[in-house]
Amino acid sequence: MGFAKYNEDIVSRYVNDTRDRASPSAPKEIQPNAGTKGKKPMSGLKQFQMNTARPLPVVVLADVSGSMGSDGKIEALNAALKEMVQSFAEQSRLRAEIQVTLITFGEVAQEHLPLTPANQVGTLTPLRATGRTPMGQAFELATALLEDRERIPSRAYRPVLVLVSDGHPTDDWQEPFARLQSAERAQKAVRYAMAIGADADQAMLAGFANDPEAPLFKAHNVRDIQRFFRAVTMSVAVKTQSPVPDQATPFVIPDAPDDDPLDIEF
Image 1 (cartoon, one colour):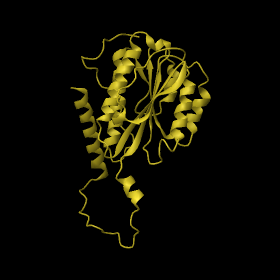
Image 2 (cartoon, helix red, strand yellow):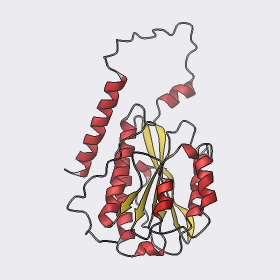
Image 3 (cartoon, helix red, strand yellow):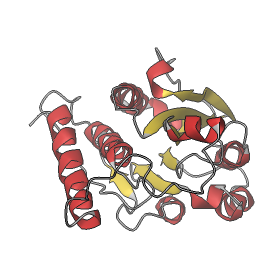
Image 4 (cartoon, helix red, strand yellow):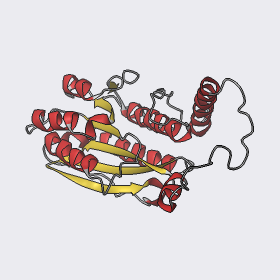
């Protein structure tokens, strides 16, 4: 089964189940203007907001330290990110508009891609592996973004944070992570994590993940990197199709198709 068809089936089953639970019987026909007597007309701004898709921010925190340059890891990460953004760009924007930002940390932490609607991203500049692992700096950038009401308005859905690393933080990460967990808006984000290879700090990464349906994912080869990002893609896609995108969604790791990169062990 292809990835697109698998994605479609997962979304279809979830949306139908949600609809059945929320509406056990068909709603009665609603007459125009019924029940509006005595109520104030809706303001133009509120009407516009109701008719405009709400932002659904996806923040990827990607380790691009020097160790990511071995065994095809950075190449697999580039391919997985490209596929994820392309899939997001194709999603319906009736309820939610998926927006993506990529924060990289290798020698320094920076916004490799500012927060942008997925359908406007265009070509991603390939990631390059270099330097140490300043994960704490990446947490600071993520917290600042999530707390910025101009970049992420209050009407946005709960953000999704995705952390990927193959090593240990080389800076002070505990305090920045504590701020990420406790900040007014950042603490509401859904967090996923992937540990690449046996040298990754699995205890720290497991503590980052906060979705009981998606514990720490351990990547043992380049195929696993792509499988993880496909699971993230499907989970976010389900949110955009659901009438209640902020509720828990499935996190299903798909099988790797035959056309994936070679199964190189880390």
